[in-house]
Image 1 (cartoon, rainbow, N blue to C red):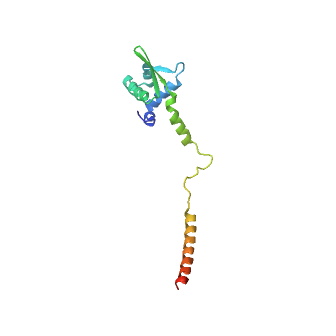
Image 2 (cartoon, one colour):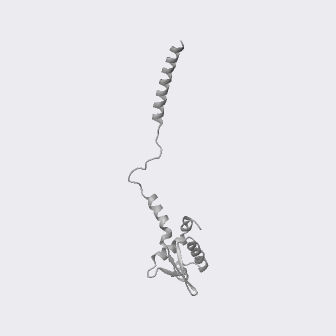
Image 3 (cartoon, rainbow, N blue to C red):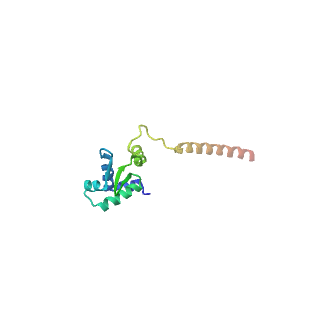
Length: 128
């Protein structure tokens, strides 16, 4: 199955989805209606409809020789949710999972150095 980003990256496929989404009544359009609305050839429309169908963005209903396509909103739910999360700035800055311990490390290093110096001095007195 194609990635939904790749599928909607094509402007013709976006136009098809938009036409089906905005279509009044049953929300279904035949291939012929799509060809007329888009002004492109039937094989080109059919190729794009196949990609959209495989990605789950459109559904199809067969009625004899005719096929009627409809927009399937659920297929874009994950994309829509991701876009709304990325598109909004958080009201509070995101908290980094990492804490800068540079200062603490330097402080601890100084404490250890001082302790080492004192232990060396005590050890020197014991030895001497």
